[in-house]
Amino acid sequence: MPPALRARELAKRYGGTEALRGVDVEVGEGELVGLLGPNGAGKSTLVKIACGLVRPSRGGVDICGAPAGSTHARRALGYLAELFRFPHWMSADELLVLHQRLAGSRGGAGERRELLDLVGLAEARDRRVGAMSKGMQQRLGIAQALVGSPRLLLLDEPTSALDPAGRRVVRGLLEELRSRGIAVLLNSHLLSEVELVCDRVVIVDHGLVVEEGAPDALRRQGGVEVETASGVRRFEEARREDVPRLVRALVADGEEVYGVRVVRSSLEDVYLEAVD
Amino acid sequence: MTAIVLYGLRESLRRRMFVVVLVLTAGFLALYAYGTNQAFDDTRGFVGVNETLDTDELAGAIVFGLALFGTMFLGAVLAVFLTLNVVRGDAEAGLLQPLVVRPIGRAQLLLARFAGAAAVCVLYVLGVYFALVGITWWAGGWTPDRLLAPGLELAAAVVIVAAICVLGSVFLTATANGIGALMIFGGGLVAGLLGEIGDVIDSPRLEHIARTAWWFLPFDALYQDALHRLTVDSTGFASFVLRLGPFGGAHAAGSTLLLWSAAYLSLALGVAVAAFARRDL
Image (cartoon, rainbow over all chains, first blue to last red):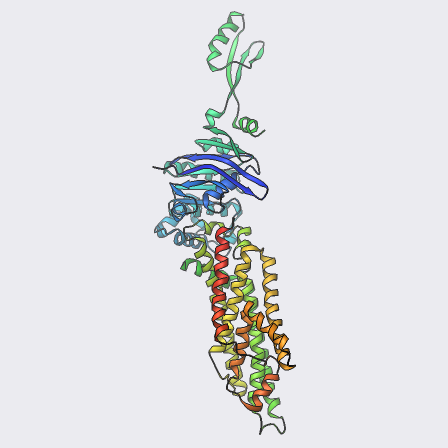
């Protein structure tokens, strides 16, 4: 089975600006991948090319084996833009009906009910978009993107307008999607969020992939701290496997050891190091 | 496709601007009813002309011709406001992207949005046109020589304005496109007016300018042809007087120009679809 998303040698030039300079990214079936990078790194351009909104200058993206922008590719994906607006006069239910028709979904009222329930808007199905808070609209946007049961979901900053409670709802939702086997490419500035839910992280800077891997694998060990009677002693170069030897040596020197901590860099450290 | 047409229709009817147009139209029709009634009364009092001229025809044709201009103007303004943001305006507002990524396809999306707006404009123009026919008949018993064709031509003229505006929306922001489309509309009318002046003062050059402009902006040709059909059966002195009246200087566009209008519409939409297909959003 082809991956949910495969970008090869993807490049995009806007006039004199190179937004992407040969990016290779893959999102496997049911995988949740976080896309990180500073403003202007090319993340949104990558997502837009995958959706067929922007044409690449070089290379290409396949969605479930079909070229991005093709009817087959568009049938396979759901998308929530970073900046989006829905007609203010439509109710949540009417909006989903429109997208069901456009997506060719046969889910009917059952699918709409399930999606609104999933994003916590079951009580607001008849509420007009114009009467919803920005956070509610964002959750409605996620429900809209899920119409037609897409195999790949492209989310561009889906939590930017959400309060902490709303973010938690979305995190739970992303985990639920993963359990259903839906692949997700999550473009977000919120490192903590990406760290919590993503299987893999891709860091983009100046139009290139500068770091890639599972969050755990990316977090590097940063030495060992040992709490002794004379204070905390830090061994910068030591690694986890050095801990028994270090403790033995300290005890042999007459130190009393109260605790040991293997220091790991956070995803934020990795990110800042990658984009520096 | 039907979903987008219905979406476009609902969006058009929901806009506050549509309510403004309806209120203005109601005011226009009320004033027209009053003015037409007065015009018929006044012209019936003309002394010495009843033997050579049907005063009801004179008043009816002139006032109705003027109202036809008002109808096209309101219809064109409606068409521009319904279509000025179809592509770039909606893309900048974030309304377009969620629709474009769906399997419907860009060409269908654009044509469906156009069809929705055009349907509203056609219904509006025909509604106002037949209301005017009814009011004129009620006030003075006069009806146009051709009842349906002028209304359809007027509606077609407005649809062409909508197509021009849809094409502009692919390239321009909503505000720039609205201004541009209204200026093009005004330019077409001015060219037509020059032709009428050229006809009266017997200036072939001015008439040539107007005729040439018709090929680039055929909505004015449709409007002039619609005016022509109002009194197409008038002959002799009545016909001469009507030609000199305000907005009565009508000309038959000819079947070639009418066919060209249909081709022009297809061409404008075809270019819009092709440009939209290549546009990054």
